[in-house]
Length: 274
Length: 239
Image (cartoon, rainbow over all chains, first blue to last red; front, side, top):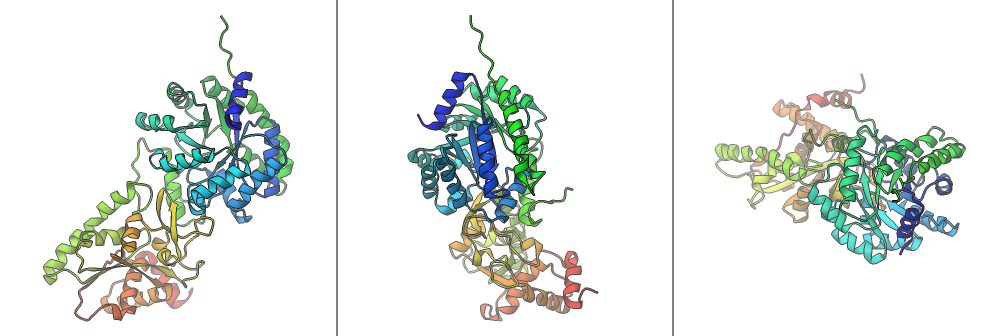
């Protein structure tokens, strides 16, 4: 069992849903990102989603677009992001890490080389939002061979036929996109999300993590109550430090507070003992 | 109408923003992609629509000249007007096809939109093709005075046709393009769009490629009304 699977097992034992926190590395500086990850990991984050900034992040809303732009302007590169995983592991971080980036980044480096680098650095998986299941097969094989998870996404618009393929191929967890839109959008129609959670959970034992539009405790609670295994929170944290880019470190207590709150929303309803 | 305020505010950012918008309304709304780019099947759909240009072109040139042209020259970045003009001629091997990109100021990576000269295989907007990018795969902003040629990627079909040698990738520099506008105005009384003027400039500046007996079709893809301020500023200064 790898650290990601072990994490879900451990949380299940405690009756907890997972919180994965998504950050774009290097925004506004490497030092801050490292401190942010440490803070989140100590305050209710069970999995770290470490984003490698990309120039054209089409699945991301304005908050993360700006984050990518700032990080790239500050000189961040994919190798620096991978190096960060190594540094975090060296510093003792045990939390599972998923690398997220758009396809062109690993494609250009060479997908196999990219995988072996992130594996060696200490990551558990890779998420590529612009890699659809139709194109994923060779990359699923490579990822499995490297001993990593290729995290696949489903959305409310995913057809039954595609969902089946995704569920069959999924490892680690399934990333359920809560809404039709981009990261940081407002979750205005939670019933759509609940329906999709039920649809996916009915077909698989693989954990289901719900992301996009999750920014407070109530969201997390409703989603975990609906049967999901956890939530993904990203833009909500970036929004906090963006308010003080001169000294983002000063916002860490506020971020820690929100992360702890959201985590308390992830408590699973205990099945009735009869 | 929604102005795009993200990124560098250029064509690629408009495509990104439209894809994002469409992610939220795809159940009720069709995406009419503006060029032969983006994820499948958009390049195919757009090429099919645009091929009306080539179909009409073929009929008209046969009527007028009684034979196929020797060459067709079209400008492009994503490649829609060019591919549309070329489509019915791809199997007509006697017809030479020229695709003219925005050379910008010079072929330096910071000053140009000539992706076939400066780009390499990469994935942008859900499609693998030739894109302008840095060594890590970050998309490089392209640069040309013609906004419509300012997409840093090439449509997959036009890239394929260039790779197989069926289409010749060429470019024209901004300076040549303004000169082509002047020539076109003086000789034909037509104001071409700055995009279109790339195709004209290429023909004007490469006499060695065309013989006097050649029937050459320049795809007059757009009018210059929209560029008139830019053109006036170029020739007469800011006043």
